[in-house]
Each structure stands twice: as C-alpha cells, then as structure tokens.
Amino acid sequence: MTLFDLLFLASALAAIASVVMAAAFAVGGRGDRAVAILKRLGMGVLAYAALLLIVAAATPQKIMQPGDPWCFDDWCLSVEGVTQMPTPSGAYYTVSLRVFSEAKRVSQRANGAWIYLIDSRGVRYSPVPTASDTPLDVLLQPGESVKTSRTFLVPNRVHELGLITGHGGPYCSMLPPVIGEGGCLFNKPTMVRIE
Image (tube, rainbow, N blue to C red):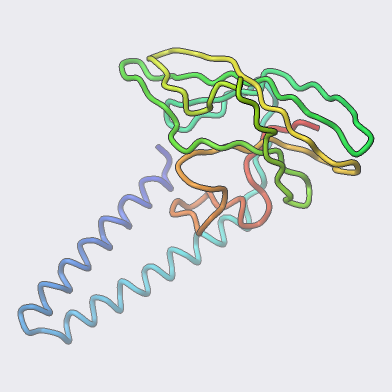
C-alpha cells in the first residue's frame, strides 16, 4: 500500500464523515452548518482532483520489461515472450503470458481482467478472440501459475507498442480515484514494452 493509497482512504473516510455530519446538522435544524460542511467537502474534492491531475501530468510513464511481474495486490501477470508474424496489412503479435497468484492462503481471480496492445498515439488493439485461450480471470489457488497467450493484429506503420492490462473496469473510463494512477489521462499508462 502506497502513501497515495492511504491518502485516498483517509480522504474517502473524511468525505463520508462530512456527509454524515451534514445530514445530522440538517436533520437537527442547523441547515446553515450543514451547508458550510458540504462547501468545505466540495473544496476538498476539487483540491484532491487538482492534485490527482497535477501528479498524473508530472509523473513519467512507467515502462516495464518482458519478464517483470505486474501485480495488482496478489494477482500478477508477466510477459514471457513475443513473436511476430508479418502479413501484407500489418503483423500478428502473439504475446506469451504467465498469470500467477502471490497469495499465501486464499484463491483469487481478477474479475473483469482486460488486456490490450497500445501504440505511441494511444490507439488500443484488442486480442483476436480464440476459444482455446485460458481466461485472464481464471481462478488461481495460492501460489498457482498458469500460462496463456494472446494474439493481436496490428496494422503497418505502428510504432512503440506496449501491453497494458488491468481489471475491475474498462481502461481509463473515468478519473481514477488514487493519485498516481492517472497515466491513461495523459497517454502515459503503465505498460510492458513490446516493440
């Protein structure tokens, strides 16, 4: 857990406490006090959002190398290798992956796991669907590891390919709640360099 994770948790708890206090004052007939609390809460939310955007803009992009473990809590993924097969219109990139659990006692899975290749312009390339691929959200026992692969079709003249992954929601769908995790807002997502 990072300092920014702790800041997010503290901010969320303070926001909940502020809403509860404002409601209590409003019910108790002190609407002016409730409004003052909600105004301070609004200023705090704006300050947090501004800090989130400033840190996201100033933070350099994190580039990982094949073989580096990329972990979300105890669910991890690593790129084990990449092969390329040229075609007249582009190339098929097959990325060998290892999905593994660092948990010591519980089984787990990455619900809603997704994976893309992304280029220097921020264009994402989805994997070519294959029925034989092991799902990324496979249930893993403590310390278990599974190997799988994903194949992507990338057009010609695409440069600086990287692999991005995550789970629990779509890629960069909204302002991320934790400071330091906003790389996709400025086309600087954490990625594993492929090419």
